Amino acid sequence: MSDHKVCIVQFPQTRVAVLEHRGAPALIGRSVGRFIAWRKQAHLPPRTNATFNILHDDPAITAPEAFRLDLCVATEGEIAPNQDGIHAKIIPAGRCALLRSAGSDDRLEEALTYLYRTWLPASGEELRDFPPVVQRYPEMPESEAVLDIYMPLE
Image (tube, rainbow, N blue to C red; front, side, top):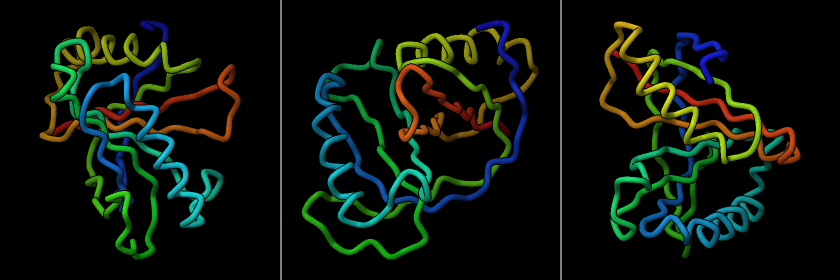
């Protein structure tokens, strides 16, 4: 991961529709299925509406029942009351370290570890009080997957 370039970028305030996954990481697939079904019904396809995850917890150190992950889609539209509990949130604007990770989700942990344990201490930067945000590109085949990891900075 050390060969990857970390850039400082200005992340724009982004209004999102969110499904809050709460519970064991092993059950994320169920939440993703509900989220995708709602997203299709709401006509918010990945090619026109960006996909994000807000990473509240590290599954390696968080009890499964306490684990939190937000599944998000960018939208300016109103979010009608729904049985899936999807509601609006804002990903705040601000400075972020950006690291692009190529490959499957298996590389996400490696990329986050690099950002937190190697890049951050050497950078002189300080974390902002907001969890990391991952922008996904789900329209790409998994073999060509790209994840943009945003680490909010002061």
